Image (tube, rainbow, N blue to C red; front, side, top):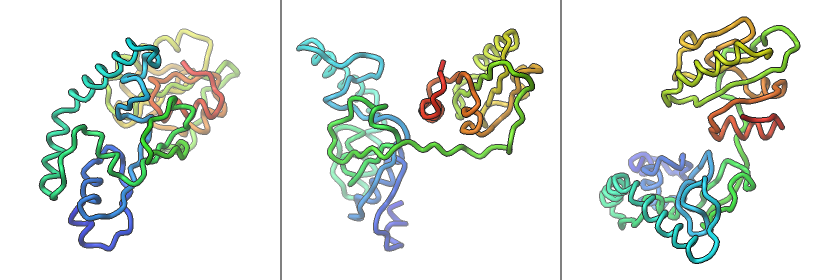
Length: 239
């Protein structure tokens, strides 16, 4: 990335927020940089709990909990921090105390989500909320729903591999016993042939979630940001 930045007269570097090397290259060359974050704000922040499943701090004990939690979270990123600082040193940059301090060095961190979905927002001054990306991933074309008038259920777990075949199988088996129509999208990580289908339960690798959610009565998801926020935008109940 640094070599490319030196070879071309770029005015700005726009990088996925987890590609910290691209941000390092931009910083080393003095080129303005923008980090794109396609989910909620991942970095620890003094105004947010260290984990998303616990409520905001209340009182001295709550603030102590958050300080300890943030310190432990930082330790988990220790190996990544060492690699990041080695890359920074190779480009003549000072070391960072925390891995995600690299985001603080970017001119902007653009959050591809709704600010209400990421509450409370972080206290980083370079963060801007620009709204979610609701585009679909490439699919195999239009999909005919299973026939009938029964309620329609859309199932979508992660598009990356999370050892989710067993869970998809249990969901498919359960749906086959219910008076519903269903479409299960496996994503590229799971072979659709490995998941049991039924006359009223279609199993496909990909389909337009935007089109299906407009007709769905329920969305079942592992709460990945993309599927969940599309369902929220479509006003569909979510399990």
